[in-house]
Image 1: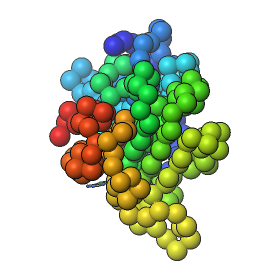
Image 2: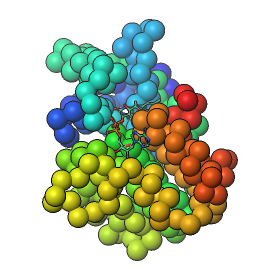
Image 3: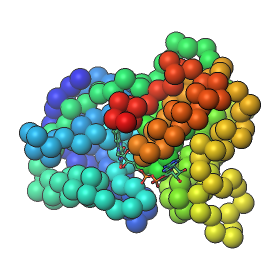
Image 4: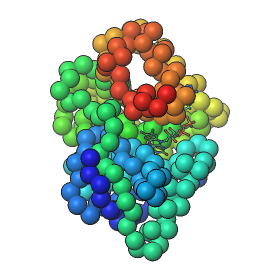
Length: 235
Ligand SMILES: Cc1cc2nc3c(=O)[nH]c(=O)nc-3n(C[C@H](O)[C@H](O)[C@H](O)COP(=O)(O)OP(=O)(O)OC[C@H]3O[C@@H](n4cnc5c(N)ncnc54)[C@H](O)[C@@H]3O)c2cc1C
């Protein structure tokens, strides 16, 4: 883990409630795809955010927010905005968590994101593509409304790069124009895989989702030791 200051280079809206943030650390940082950082609002108030970028990239990318604007995200964002306007750095602890990508496994991969849990699996998906790993990857992204699929086009492009990649967006409450999958994202996985025994499974999203996924997937054959989610430590 590296504790350092970072300049806030960019804050831009991805949806009305989700923002993309780019930070440049003051020193070299060590982290793996799938790890998170803690943004230090004060010495006692540190908030975890998944790192959406990969270790190969110079800037750290965060996706902050959720379907419902809450204080967890809005206070972190207010701090980032304030420091950005004052041209002052923020403090962060970078490279935390145990749910990082396991590149040495040969098992096929399921990446499962709920809402801004996308950030976590996006980093892993980019690392898989950059390393040209020859493993099937099934990327499921569940959101409440299709407007929350802020990187839909990017992910379609990612899937188009490799016949072994599949991207499945799942909208919980779709409108009449939606032609894709609907309902809860973990249900889509349960429908698509008779058994989850063979897979490495990476999960991020609301804590309630992580709990449901852990139990339902194990019941459908997943091995607990092949399921990775930092949320499991919180539930
Ligand atoms: C280590 C760590 C990292 C974090 N990283 C971030 C981050 O990068 N950015 C951030 O903003 N916050 C982060 N958080 C905080 C928190 O996890 C997010 O605020 C939360 O995931 C946001 O969810 P959402 O509102 O986007 O999802 P929602 O819109 O609430 O849900 C999206 C989808 O998830 C599924 N889902 C939701 N609830 C359930 C349920 N009860 N059962 C089954 N499926 C369900 C559904 O398919 C739904 O459509 C992090 C927390 C921790 C501990």
